[in-house]
Structures are given as C-alpha cells and as structure tokens.
Length: 273
Image (cartoon, rainbow, N blue to C red; front, side, top):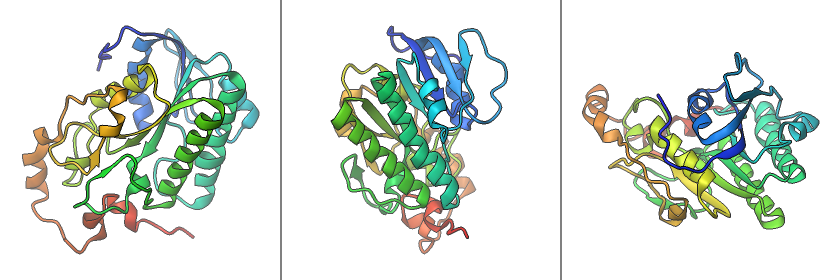
C-alpha cells in the first residue's frame, strides 16, 4: 500500500532496524516517502536495495557495527530484536545488550530522536477489565516484556542524561485484521502504524514519551491522553471486523489466563529450559 503522505517534513537519512521482520517489511515500503535516504538493517535477508535505500546488515550485539550503522543518521525507527517470548539468552543479547548498543551509538553519532518499538507486553499482567494510561507502573507478562521495560527505562535515561528523545511505542497487535476477540481491543492497522511512526518522528518536541499503538477501537484498555502531544490520530477500527471475529470465537473461557490478562497468551508462554 502506498504511503499516506501525512506530513510535508522530510528526514535526510532515516534508519530502520529490524527491516526484514513482519512490521519492518511493511514500514520499509512506506517510510521512504518521508526521507531522502532510508537505511535499512537486519541480520535476516533484506533483498536488493530499492532506489533511495542503503542496506546495512548488522547484528545488534555488534557494538562497533552499531556505531558505524548510525553514522550520518538523523533519526531511527528501531524494530530490531526478539519480538516474541523466547529463552533468556537470545532476549538478553538482542533486546538488552542490543538496545544498549543502539543508544550508545546514537549518543556517539549525535542522533537526537529514536522511535523505539516497545510492546503492550510491558503491562500485560493488568487485567482486561482495567483501563490504564501510559504512566501506570509496568507489569511485564514475559521475559520479552521485561526486556521491553528495560528498553524504555534505558531510553528514559538517555533522554534525561544526554537529551536523546524517544517515543516508545507499546505496539498492540498489528496485522491486516484482528485474529481473535482480544485483538478487538489491541488491533493496530498498518495504516495507523504508519501514522503513529510518522507522528513520532515529526512531532516538534517529544522528550521521552510512551504511547500505546492501537487503532480507534471501541473496546480499549489503554488511555493515550498523556501522549496527545505526539499528534497521533488513528483512523481505522477493529470494529469493522467485529461481527466476523465474534462469529469465529463466540465464547471465551473466563478461567483461561489469556482471557483474563491484557497480555493474552504471553502470560502462559514459557518458561523455557
């Protein structure tokens, strides 16, 4: 789908990490409209460079490689790392050591803004009958959620200490359409994902901001009022798919932790040996 072109601002060189992942592939095709050069990175296959792209495959664990990766970059959209619950060691290396290398590289190279793909799993152990805002204490539902909470805290430190601005996107469930009843609350359309990322890149002042990544869904557990300065206004809604989702899943087991807690199946995934 073509980019939405919702801003006239352009970024000279924008870095997209995790560009070979599901959301990375989607944003790769969209973000070029907002920058002169899109530098893309991943350890997975990236294919050939399109016009206006620079391919730089680098592992997040490679400190020197990350410093080189951020040379000449004006802003970063960081989707790289582990995106599901996994054993501790890969999460440690990609989501904790790796995000530290990213922020150190940003400091050394003078990058002033990062859009950090956090996750709703930072607060996954709140219950589905609760509505929380972006300042609610974290309640991670997994080691993955713990790693994203670490990333948010590190980002806050790098803003307070070094002035590097970050918008931490607690992404809900970004797919072409919601897959189940839970996603009627957590769904984020690809177009709204683009709107969210572009707003986070182009808002005049963001400081350190947390914002939940969700569309304009009638059912909602998350209140983004304290992030309104970002200027994100979702335009899609999971309710377009509500009848079909409820027909596929007419009943929910109230004793299933995945139906009780906001984190869904993450609250009962693992532990791994």
